[in-house]
Image 1 (cartoon, rainbow, N blue to C red):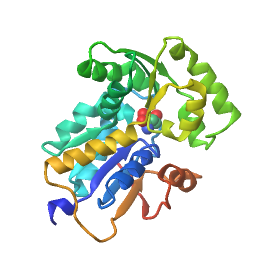
Image 2 (image 1 turned 180 degrees about the horizontal axis):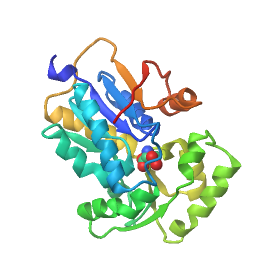
Image 3 (image 1 turned 45 degrees about the vertical axis):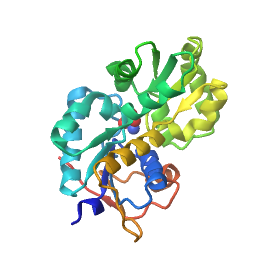
Length: 268
Ligand code: DGL
């Protein structure tokens, strides 16, 4: 198979990474995509580094067997604690992750240098965003808030719901009192509640790393002369480790298109 026609491999702990797939289909409409969501073992955001590394290794092996040309870590939690492991397994294959892309966008967006991050507990404890931002611009100050209730609320489909608003009113004030002008949505589930977040953060710039991740993928493919030039419709295949109730509905909401070619496979 021609290298350029190979698919991009995208993975997440569950359904959240579909927000990145959506951005990729809009930015790179000729690319084939293989997605893996570990729906049987989600959430990762409360699990230890060792467990996440072990699960990520299994996912990467699966995607490499699918003969992909580039890997996208579409999960902040995996990128935060297992990014190096994934890169070691990928060898010379390019690996793009949501944290690098989000840090790039936040550093460009901030005017006062005060950046907030909302994320899962594991991502917050890892300090991965603070490190990624310090590497790009030392003068920026990063304040983080773990929001463990948001993933289950979003999985429930409560995107514009009183419970979601009340939850945000618990989580956001500690960040807002720090005078942040930019807020990174440090979990791939959060773009789904962007309208509510915008209302509750009054004029703070929201960084949705799915869009910057798609840009980073486009650049990485162009640099290596790997952009797909096919004129036929792209092939999208979705693999999950479980098909929970409402997966189809929630997945289609994340993806903004019908979720076809969905297959369940067991890992490990
Ligand atoms: N998608 C994950 C992330 O971006 C959050 C979901 C989970 O806890 O597994 O961090």
